[in-house]
Image (spheres, rainbow, N blue to C red):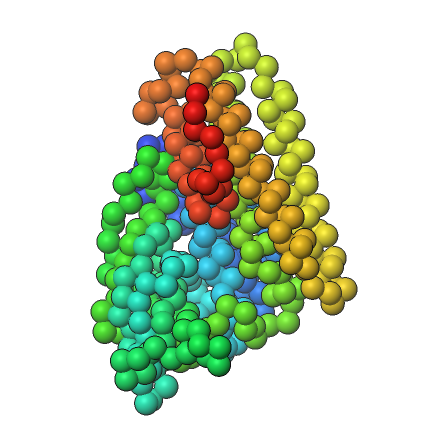
Length: 343
């Protein structure tokens, strides 16, 4: 088991999560927080899992981001047939990951298979994945299949890494070790058993009922708060004479609010009720506003740290770049129609 200090040392300036850290991840079962216990997972409750995600992001941005996205992909263990899930997750190193975009086509065959072709971007953890998940338009005889409302049918697929071509094109300023690469698939046949639909579940658990929007919002928010907590820790080392108490207290306050929201969501769902669209919107709006405020405060603090904070080999610079790379995620990005850019 590695300590926080050891993980940070391994990942400082790293371009990939090291074998030593990956061994720690698999030994501790960190990728299986959302996998049901009957499949060999940890079966964490929502609030419990969010606490883990915060601590991992606080340890290191790339570490936390990779675990969040890959553990989130392993959540799909709930969406696939039990016999397939049991088969896949028997292995301790099973690691799903992929892209949420619709980047290809799945040509339906006569033998309950699909012929997959396409390219997808931003598959976090790509060097460490055992299986890639992807979304594709379902086609038949070269034409898109539509539902009764005329919408194209989209299906998700699980493809073993051996059938995938990884394109190591992650050149962002931060999250350098997250392995967020593109990938392509060319003429690969996938059995229908290795496909799934997001809102169809083969397990019976409260976690299955959490709206994807809420799940995405809260798992990302604890990442931002975790990275911010690490940032202010490193900032204090450079400028110990500055009192960052209020920054730290704000992180703690918002973290407790996120946990409270998660607990409330589980309580509502436990009472066999749905999370109303209005409540989902309120949660999302809270996340958008929090990320905006947090980003401004991190920038304000960074400008107080002096030239040492611009050293590209320094911990504070890495955390700063990790945060603003993560903050570019489209989930909480504000509309460009409203801001006034004059000064």
